[in-house]
Image (cartoon, rainbow, N blue to C red):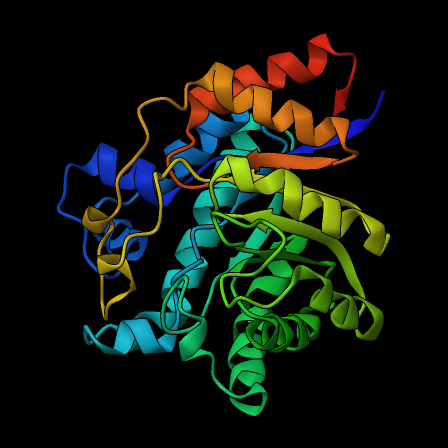
Length: 298
């Protein structure tokens, strides 16, 4: 039996559901301003469900996104607010690790917007230095091209913390990134940088087995956390989209999601959890399944 790191589930969709506010292109960042404490409460719910990691609500806090809404002066303060809410939840739970999230520059699922390495790496390094004193690991999420992943990894290393690289794969062919590049191309990054774990995230759960089959031979701890969307729509790939353009699945019950995740564990994955539309109920059921199968959660 294995020791499993159980990640939390999605944050942005939980915030939208609980706040009742109309989603904006700022995703979960706006909600932190309008509803202080809500992020902490969601972290707390995930800890109560059995998660061993709180992923900070910093995924979309990038200059390029804040500038569109005149909020760039709050760049540093928003990171600290998200970090504080994660720490408050962890203190109340009395356990757990904190993963500092860094998402794609410009937009998710848009490899066509990937900046040059000389541009992206310093942007990520700036965030990594803010996160570093407050997190246990840097989690690079939803990287959809090798170039974006490399810039994020280079920047993340400025933190001095372990770096987990998580990529978003094609919903129909999990062996490829959303850019169309084969996942095997990530091996160059594994050989060149001290990445400590490889994951796939924010793709449909049906795509993850193919992704893990490619990631496993690279020799690092690996895992997956899928989303609960039907697919990434064409409208969402336009400029400044909102989550209104995405449709959640009605069939992805906690039981069905746990079946997927337990299959990933059966492949050797030691890091599992959930992404968008996978909530505390899913994580709670998955925690129960892991324990029932004799695994430990750490």
